[in-house]
Image 1 (tube, one colour):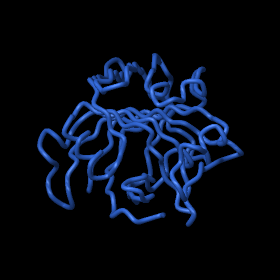
Image 2 (cartoon, helix red, strand yellow):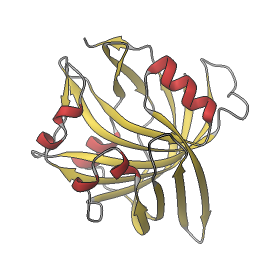
Image 3 (cartoon, rainbow, N blue to C red):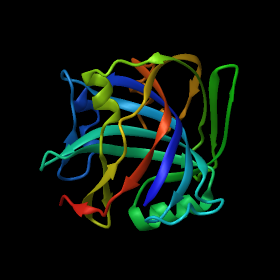
Length: 225
């Protein structure tokens, strides 16, 4: 599967790994840097998602998404992302990804616009048992440093997911992120709280980045446990 992630915001809060260790599937644990792990809030535009080398799927292959994520490493040392939620405005994507891959997609009403140098993302859940909204404004700045923390938060090369009683790792490949610093011009978010982590991210984010985007491809899932 291939796609392009465009106009990507990265908002991160440093947290105690012990506070989220219970959320990881068997065979996977929190990945840490300097004794801390991070919860991420990542809004972006998905563009031209499709299969193999074919064209992007019309309409359904381009959509808005915002995900809440943790950072993971498995027993074989493979690093990745553990998604707690993935919210999108395409109901067909929600149904397909939950059924086929076990990913925690949720349907939401979403908007994106870029004007005056500010990228604005908005989401409102349309999901049973969950009520949350999010508004984010980011003003990208200069190129970001190529530091250890920046690589830890963005160069993950895979995801971990629990599905049908198994823990899976799915590799991805993409060029290095063209990262920029970013100023938060607006942040009123309920998505992180909607997955039970609101008490861990009560203040402003500890780290913020923006990227114009990269093309991405995904490999075949392999079993962790």
